Image (cartoon, rainbow, N blue to C red; front, side):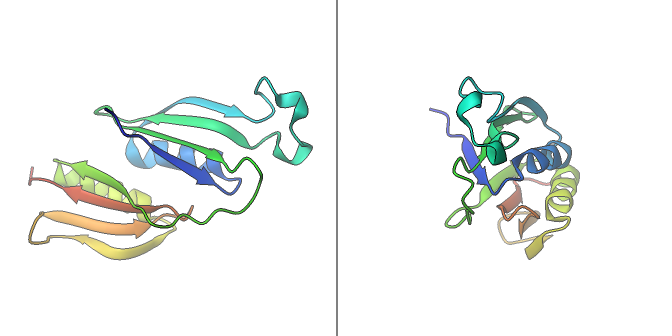
Length: 137
């Protein structure tokens, strides 16, 4: 079984995925607008440039997927955090700094009793993240 995180956005999915590609060192392998879909001629004009589906593949095999909310309604992410597990402390620090840029830090990236580095933030797109370094490297 593989579990993949699928995020909904408020019309800024394209910008968010470009940000995540840079912050996480991943590659966007698919991004389609509502207007580019087979049903594109039936999509309201204000939704044609919104993202129907995006896929970001990350080093090590992780996948992040997402889209703009199909009805254009505002969504507020609650009840979860996207968790990143790293073994390389320098890379974990870099990723946390990247994700927290323009967002809000709930817990600075720091040593804890279980990890040489752990931090929590909500990025500029309102997505909550936890970055954890499993071992010092």
